[in-house]
Length: 245
Image (cartoon, rainbow, N blue to C red; front, side, top):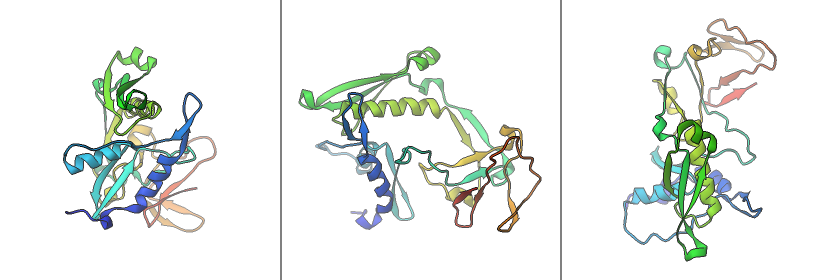
């Protein structure tokens, strides 16, 4: 009654569809689309929860922004390269120039994931695939988590979901919090941004641009470049994009 087709951001769905339909090679040598959804919704539930379950198929989430429903997901580029940050935060554009860091609880770092999926070889009844990391087990002990691969009928898709969650909990072991102004509206949920913190790096490598020409950039304070060559400069342009040269 409240959501129309015009409320959907179709532009955001296109790269998600490309990533979901890209063929990946399974451990047995076969190939299949990265994500597929085969399910029957046979019971009533909150509409928002159902939509979030559907978004979880492609490791995504939905949120409301600018009178549209935005869909985002945790994925890389189709060619395997790293995602380019959409914005750069430094001590110069956060309030009081302070970044606060905290580590996640060790209890939230799983070392074994049991993924439930619908097994087509057993009349689509529930089955499990287990993913574990021996290195993490020796480091954090045996901590098991059970998740559901919504709409998954491929054990390899369920296995990829388990590996993604295991790796995410390992890599996302630290949280950074800070307060900023209108720059905070530049980054949307699910996007990647960069942080240059003088207190953590031990040297100031970021700041404001006071003036610029086509051949020279004047910054707000003296900066000592690190040793070595191949230095790069990342600047936030007037349209909010980051250019690196």
